[in-house]
Image (cartoon, rainbow, N blue to C red; front, side, top):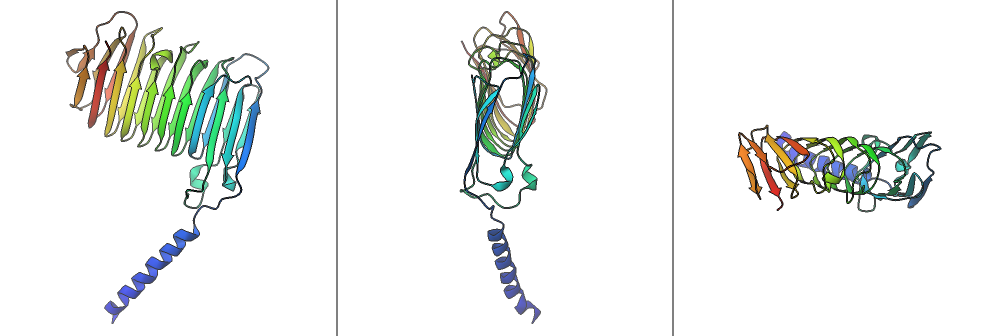
Length: 283
């Protein structure tokens, strides 16, 4: 008798779960558009910009007249952005993803489209959940750049030199796809990349103005490292990964790949156990 009840009970449980899932679909409201027009601070001191978004689409471009200009478009009530301002701090923040209840649908919108100033030094911090990101940071005066994300698809680019020295560039992400272009123009002293399983392309196009160090630690990933012609690069395999493919001219000695060029040195410490690494030295 008990066995005869199992299937009906399971059917009721499954039906209940289905109803529950339908009932927790994330509720949307009429699309809201927030206009942002933040003026420059009253001095030329370094200003910290902090952006924390729940997840969605995020684009940054350079060259606005004010400190930050743009729009935030959303249609989930809890995602109304909060603003914090002081003399040399500007923060835009949405609620943390874990505070949101419901399952996102195709109707959910959360899009940030911002433009940043080139006129003063900036300490830029970006934090977010799963998102599609397009960050053009060309010509910004970046003193530090910190990006922390969930599983994301990200493009970051530098098309001309950072006018000042960047002390540190830090990029931390979950299982993601990322393309960072023009890193030689970023003018950083130290860079760290910490990633989950994913596909990562690091293109160091540009001219080094000082020695720079990069620390890479990733899970089961495909990583492509592109070194331009004329750049002196030393890539040290500190992990146990053995699947390293090289293109162009390299000197290999004791798990260390060197381009044997003159000038400032880019040192890359590579810590991976499993995955694929493609080293490309352009002629």
